[in-house]
Amino acid sequence: MFSVSIKYLFVSIYFIFFASFIYADPYPIYKKLSSIAVLDQESLFTKSIWGKDILKKIEIRVANLATENRSIEKLLEDEELFLTKKRKIIPKEEFDILSIQFDTKVKKIREEQAEKQRQINNFLNDNKNLFFKKITPILLSFIDELGIEVLLNKDTVALASTGSDITKAAIVKINNQLAD
Image (tube, rainbow, N blue to C red; front, side):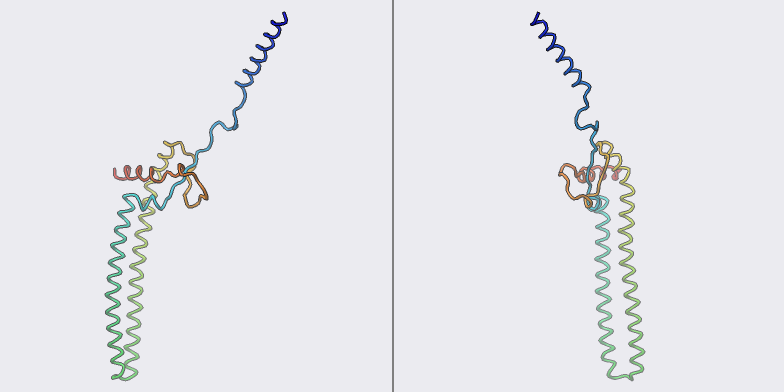
């Protein structure tokens, strides 16, 4: 009888333990942990086919502008040297007029060249904005596929594991999608 009581006691303890184990909340309490990834936005642009193409066009425009600036600089130096030589042989009033005309010409050229540089910068900014506008749906679809809930820019993250950076995979996805 004592052995039956002990068996009954062990069976009861077993069922109580098993039942409480089944209904207990696992640690941590949250059923799904938040999935966070990081992305290097600058690399998305500079390493994608689209971005490389735009940067190549920018490089050509900047090189052309630099060549043009050197050519203009040489012409202005020659004109300044001519004015310097003329200063010795013409009246002061006449030289002052020529000097003012030269300064006006130089200022106008500087403004024109600065405007060309602004146009290059605007071209880059407009194309970056268009790029990010086009890739937003691609990135949203991609992070849904991966089960990512939050995507942070790499520049705003202090520390992250190397596995949390999805930049390279995103570039491949973007190149494939934008090629279509």
